Image (tube, rainbow, N blue to C red):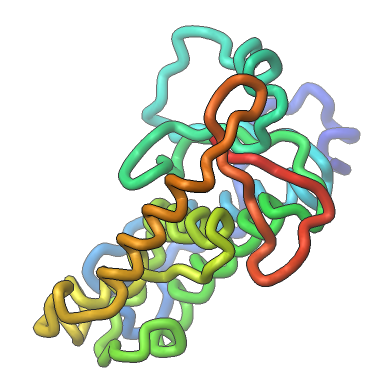
Length: 230
């Protein structure tokens, strides 16, 4: 806000918080797949949460490989004006690289989801040893997935169902790439859990402003205001 007041014509900035080196830990996600995308995941998800919730701004996040052939704001402010999180569809629900957040009250389900997403990215990027807190059968070396897309989908599943989910982003990745890769997805409880949560998400859909949307919840808490994802 101070930067905008001081330089109202400024259109683009670069975050000085993006370091040049990868985290110094033994997470296999960092070791085997690291590039600068991961720090962008970390910084931009914190900025989206702070801008949308703390400062009350509406935020359009768009990847650099996205081309806009029409102005999306007539849709955002027209048919979807009562939806708080508008996303591009991707497996299983959203693409974490392109979405719009608007009118996000503090204490709402979407406010919780935005900050929770950054918390998970930060946690698994810098503390792979914490994986076992969420996936009890996981064994080192931990993969400790900090990819924003899989984490965002699990956060939204958690918020929609009001049930904490790390199945698709953390458990599955530990089974596939981590020290637990020999266990097999068929042999862990998260496989059935994820299937049941997908069904619960499907049953929660409602009509908001004439289109399908999902109510978002503060996990284990009470929302100050309703928010919706579509």
